[in-house]
Length: 227
Image 1 (cartoon, rainbow, N blue to C red):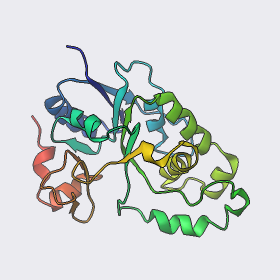
Image 2: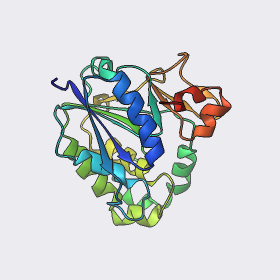
Image 3: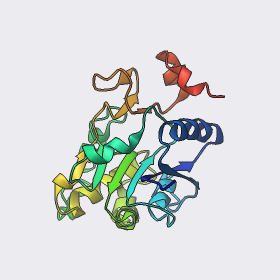
Image 4: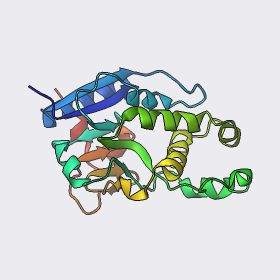
């Protein structure tokens, strides 16, 4: 069967990846599914292995979804490519899990020598990213270049949000138009933080749970129980 889109992630944790694969394969039958080995292309950033997903050379289509493996796919995700319209990249903003903007405010003064950049950048989650017709290497190279930018590393050494701060900085400053970005709505990419944040949906297309305990605490642990 010919794949209609590609779906990729990083194998950070064997059990977590097993659960992720179960729901992906159950609900996305026309996706070419890829799980890549975790490496650290940026050694001081623990989560930088996801950058490798965009230099991957075995994609079968130009429609690509990246997901963290701490997600549950609850329905076929092919619909997102229609929902994003003419946008070439989709990501989620307005996720109250990390105090991203507080971090930004604290670092504005430190970054004052680089006001050629639009700063602070918008906060984008890297937990779900959708590309439609965009060269994944363009994203990889821009994201990597920003991560390796010496002043950036100096200001944010080993910061918990290093990958997402760099991603936001690149998207803010190098994409030709902001309207190229589809802001993924919460009923599509919903997060379980203290409580489910699904934008009014009973169950989103992608449940981003971050830690199994959060599903259990909210009576959603059935998603972890797979054959």
